[in-house]
Length: 285
Image (cartoon, helix red, strand yellow):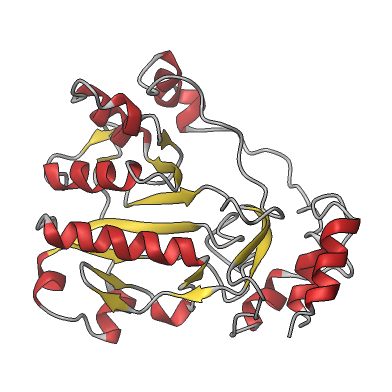
């Protein structure tokens, strides 16, 4: 068990963000751990979304009212208890409003940390990917294990025109995004720039509050990525910078449709920084 005394001593004596790692762990080390750690206060996020871990992670039930978890073989259905509660609440909202069944992609690994594939973030138990596919089949029945592995999330963006694909998009998608963004624990939601532009074009009076949380980002054409705020009682959790003022439908959005944004030049290969010392201790618990 993760020692309460050792944890409190580390937390009070050092900066968990600046402390050197006990030993350099790898993504393979983190993916090999299949069970969450214990923690005296329940779920406890450590470090940042892109350089962190989670003690006492909760496991999302593989199905519930209004949602089903996909890609079970990855075993990335762990997260902070607040993230689990958010997904279950959003699923219930989708069911109550007859918006379709939410298909849940990755949360994080049993103790968070870096993954072997797919993500740079999802490390501290506060991120989740939700497919844009609102399946009628999933509404009627429980998907099989094979379907959960083989189904693909279809894009809702016409990538040639770089705009929303009306054949794949519906008002229900807007309602799901609005319901997610209106929840107070949500910090921001990443979507493809074309999705953000479509929401801005259809903006209704009073929508700016939740629309501000919808942020354009590369590759999010087949799913949206929800990121929660650091829980108030998790002092070792490092949040992201505050959102810019406004609803994001200004000139800053136009940049995402330039050639520079569409085809960014590859940057230098960077070495990930060492994980916080508490994460290295957590890995070896």
